[in-house]
Length: 613
Image (tube, rainbow, N blue to C red; front, side):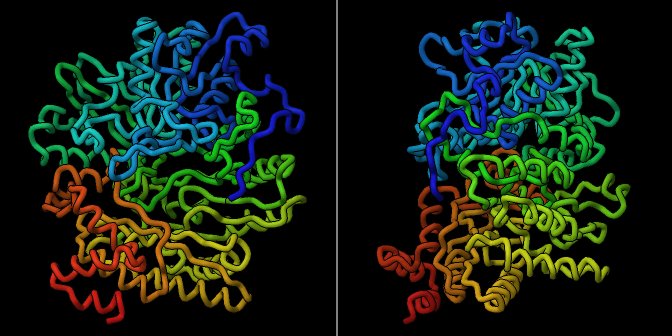
C-alpha cells in the first residue's frame, strides 16, 4: 500500500472545520467555555471510523461545544490535561480504536516498535491502559468533574475480566479508573441520552438508568429480572465461578431484550444496564452523515497515520456480526444484530470520497466487520428477541436467518455507476459459510451464486481475504467456525471463476495457532493440509487472550463456560512457539526443529508429508 503524507488545505477546508484541540483553536471560535472535553489515545482523525471523532461530532450535533485532546502527555506536569480548563458538563475518555495492550504488545508480550494510530507510527504516545491512566489524572486534578469512560478497552472490561498481560483476574475497569460512568458498545445513543438528561437539569449523580451504561454504587437493590453474578472476589478464588459468569455475560450481550447485570466488588456493586435495541437505519445514517472532514487534523500536516491510510478510501456499510467466533470481540462490542446504513447514506459518503484530491477512482473497501452481512436479519423478529445464541451461523445456519445478498449487490452496482469510480474492492473478510449454505428459498441461493460470481470477478484487488482459522474439526468447533472442507469448496469456486475470467487472483486465508483445544499435532496437520493446497501462509497470528471472549475465558479458567468441561490450552511461551513454527514449515531454518518435534510426538508420517521423504 502506498502511504503518502497527509497534506493540509484539501478541498478548501479550514482549521475551523475540525473540532478544536488547543486553547488557540478554541479562542479562534470565540468560545468562552467548553461543554465537553474528550481525551483520546489516538491521533485525531475526523472520520466516522474513529471513535473520538464520532462522539465529538455527535455531541456537536446536540448543540454542544466540544474539544478533543488527542494523545495527551500523561507524564510530567499534566499540562495537556490542564490546557483547556474545566468543561461545563463532563470529561470523556477513550483509549482509542484498539485495545491499548494489543496495540502495544505482541502475543508473546513483546513491546511493539510502532503505533498505527500515531503520526509517523511513533511509539510511546499513549500509556498502557489509557482508560485508567487518563481518568485517574483527571480525577486528581478535577475531583468534582464527572468523567465518562468509553471505547473498546472500557467496553470489554466492564465486569471482572482476565488480563493476559498481567496474567491476573481484574475487577471491572470502573474500580481502577474511578470514572463516574462507563458507556459500552457503540456510544452514540447513550451519549445523546446522557446529554439530554443533563440539559433537562438532572444532576449527573442521578443518571443511573441510561441504557448501555455501567456505574459503581454502594447500594444493591436488585430488580426481579436482574442477573446477579458471582462477586469479583469469588471469581478470584474459584475459576469455575468465573467461567459460569461468562455464559451469562455473553448471552446478555447478544440478547435483544436484556436484563441488568450486577456484580459485587468489595463493598460496592457494578451495575450494567441493558443495551439499547439495535440502531435503526435512520439512527446509523445520522451518525455517518455528520459533517466529518474525513481527514486527520491539520496539526499532522506532512506526517503519515497508517490506520487512516488503510481506510481513507473505504466505506463502512454496516455494524455488528452474527458469526459469534470464540476469539472475537466484535459482537461483544457492536452486537450480533446487523445494523445497516441506507443506500442513500452510503452513496453520499462515496461521492464525498470521489471529491478528495488524491482519490484515483479506486475504493479499497465496501464492507464491515464481515463483508457480506449487509441487511441480513431474522425472518421473524419475535424469534430473534428470545434468542440467546451468540452465533446465527454456528454450528448451523439458523433457519430464521434471512441471508439475502441482493441488497449488497445493489450497493455494489450503484457505487460502480457513480462518476469518478473506476473500481470498488472488498477489503473486509468474507464469510464463505454464508455463501456455501443452501437455503430453502431458491431466490436466496441464486442471489448467493450471483454475489460470488460478481465478488470474485469484479471486486477483488488481487487478493481476497477469508478466515478459515484452522483445519482440524476439534479446534474449529471450539472456535465456532465451520469445517475446513467448506474452505476447500469455496477455493474451488474461487479458482473456477478466476479461470473463466482470465484472472490470476489470490485467496488469502487467515489462521490462528495456540487457540484453546489446539495441540501441536493439530498444527502439524494444518501445515500438511495447507501445503497440499499450495499455500505458504502469510496471514497468521498466535492466539492472544482479550477480555470478554469465550476463548479467553477457556484460556484462563481451563473450563468451557457452557459445558464446564476441561479444555486443553497452550499457555507457556514454549508451547506457543512450538505451535507457531508449523506456519513456517517451508522455511529451511525451521525444518530441523519441526522434524525433531514430530519425532518426539511419534508422528514421523507427518515429517514425510511435509518434507517429501
